[in-house]
Amino acid sequence: MGYGRSTMDEQIEIIDFGLKEADFFAMGLKGALLDFSSEALHAHPFHQVLQIRNGVALLQDGGGKRPQYGSMAAFIPAYVPHRTEVIGEKVTYQSIYFNKDLLERENRLNRRLPDERTGRLPPRLPEQ
Image (cartoon, rainbow, N blue to C red):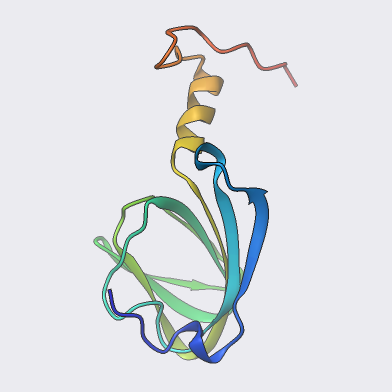
């Protein structure tokens, strides 16, 4: 995986949410991209929510390239090859990375599906 002139010329800030246990892992990252996030498509074992804060970028994956600008956000599922390419000047961004199992756990709770380990239904969520 080759990383190019991305955040290396700018300060990167890691946002620690204090969720380090494997089941609940989440962290944030913010900084600037000058050209691209990586030369080739790359993937990681975490879901990612990417927000372009300033500037224009193209988010590329197996389905093509889509523009991101004006505080747009994109959900990038775990293991999906992708990259971000800067159009024009540098872009500032922030990302949240989190354990892919967190969404499955929420889906089970919201749909009241049985827990895979115990076979029990989760408690009902309070009505709002």
